[in-house]
Each structure stands twice: as C-alpha cells, then as structure tokens.
Image 1 (cartoon, rainbow, N blue to C red):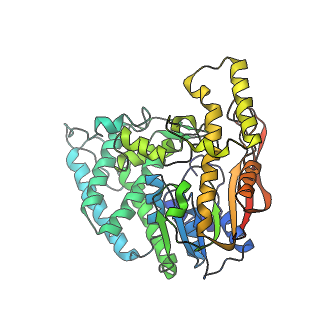
Image 2: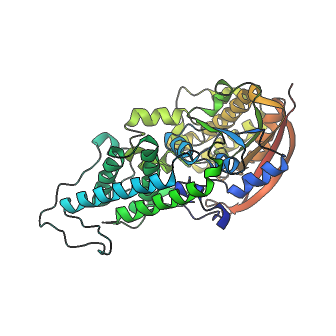
Image 3: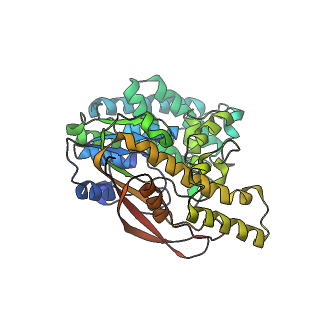
Length: 432
C-alpha cells in the first residue's frame, strides 16, 4: 500500500509487492470470500475492477481460473505481468544481472558511480557529466510538479532504455514492473495520503539498488509459485461498464471486486508518474481517453458528453443526495467549477455502476455470487453517501438478490472526522 493502510500479512507479501495500487483491498479478504462462496478449481472468478490484480493473484495461488477487467493501462499492465508466472526464475535473474551490469557501466560513463559499496552523492567519475535525459514536454505537463527530481529521472530513463534492449518480451515486462514499483516508492518525491502529493525532495537515488532488489523478489516468488503457472488468469484492458461485451455468456461463477468510491480522488493521478515514464500515457488526449473509460467517481473525470446519470434518474435516494449536495453548496457559497459538479458526479457514479451491473448479467451463471467492497463517503461538502446500501438497491432493481452487507472495517473521514463504514455488498444472480 502506498499510504501505509492495510499492511499486508506476512503470507500476503509476495506477488502483491511487485507493484501495488493505492487502497487495494487486502488479499486475505479475497480468500475469505472464495471460501464463503465455495469456489473450487473448476470455477471462474471475475474481478471487473481488478486494479493491480489482488483477486487474480489469490485465485491463481489457489488453482482457480480468473478473469480481470481494468481500464487504467498501468494497472492493467501490472495485473497482466503479476499473473504471468511462466518465466524461468534463473533466466530472469541472469537478465537482471545483465541489465544491472550494462546500466552500471552507462552510469559510470555519464559520471555517476553506482558500484556496490559506493555511497550516495559520490564524487563524479568525470568532472563534466553528460546532459540529463528528460521526458518530452507533452509528457512532463501530465505530471504533478516535482514528482521526481532531474537526476533520479535521468537514471530511471537510462535504466528503462537498457531494460527494453535486453532479454525477451516476458523478461522485459518483469523489468518494467520492477522499475515502476521502484520509481514510485524509491526514486520519486511522491507521498500518498488521501491524495497524491509531493513529499521530501530526493536529489539523487541509488536506482540500480532499488530495481535489482525488486527483480530478486520477483525471481523468488516465481520460483515459489511456478507450480501454478498454468492456471489461467486473463486481464482485459476495457471499460467495466460494458463488461458483457468482453466476457463469455454464462461463464462466471463468482465476482470479487473493489470498485472506485464516489469521492474527489483522481485515480488516474495515482499511477500518473509510472504511466508517463513507461510510455503508457503520452499526452493529454490519451489521458482523457483513460479517464473516459473509468466509472465517474471524481469531478476531474466528468465530461459534458457523459450520460450515465440518466440511468438512475428515477432513484429517489440518489436524487435526494444530489439535491442535498447542491443545496449545501449554495448555502456555503461554493462556486468553483469542481464544486458545481459535485451533485452530477454523484449521479454519474451510481449511473456508471448501474450500467456495469446491468451489463454483467449475461456473463453470470445462475447462482453466481458477488462481493463488492465499497465505502461510505462524505467528500462532497460533508453530505453522507451510503455507497453500499445504494449499490445494493441498484442491484436489486436489476434482478440481483441481495444476500447482505458485511462490515469490512471503519475509517475516519479526512474531511469531517466522522467514522465511515467500508462494507462488502453480497449479491447473487438468480438467472432470470
């Protein structure tokens, strides 16, 4: 976890640590519901908001087929790599050693010595160092200012170039995911709390040390889990609101997922640095395309052409909440463009989830069980949104049977200090 919440249990620290999404739900929760749903190796589990692959990894460990849908290209890439256990660990270690050796030599030629035992901020090998590499202007504009300092960025881009010039396709994918993880946690200046921000500025980093440690961890995990390498786990880079278009009819036995919550967190910012550095998002047009494929959960992702809100115009409680937010906005004199969108993004969020649940029905087997991890929110001018109950209401209107709502945990709102519930909405598809 980037913000320190939900620290992993010892048995969970392995494949999940290759690269992990902010606020991902814990692996043990997946295992709990796989057990409660009596899922076995002949079943198929879907995570339609799979993020960096927590559900898929846990299923693969247990020999259960899984399918994921993820619209964020960085998270999709992470899920795809983390569920590919086919590479020989010995060959991957050799690849990592080769990349490290070549990169170390390049650094030395450029005036930066990262030989083992050399301290950080060494005296340059040459009195005049090579010009620093940087991102293209269109790419730099996408980043939060001071996300990463010039020298760590230069080292990252140099290392990435070497990663992409050696080994086979699978080895390079592992190299890139290890780099993405090190980039965020060790090279960048980012800090993660309720939102992404800039913390302590790092003028220099030991780039090779961070990357090599990640590659060694991956090789160890592959060696441990290779017995499950043949268990299918497929990840689709797609919009979960159109899930039925990408899934085989009548193919899913269970769904375990954690969709976004309705709040002001821009989920695209969470992976912005690594997405840009790895070339998965190259300009504002591609960023806009990414956001348009997401369920609308924050005002930075709302567009004039959005129509998801039409699907829930008849839902009395959602309309009441939207009205309460607008009334409070007027009372408080809030007039910014983002604040004016608070009521609409609430409607768009639940409309998007309605679309998702409607589309999903054709892929579910009769009797399929579903678990949605969601949380209460008070981000919009402290108007309470009981996400779990509203999601259950929408599901029931679409023909799902509501089995219950489990309390997962509570947390304090960073806005109001109020205690908010995170819950697991349990559904069943009767097959009508």
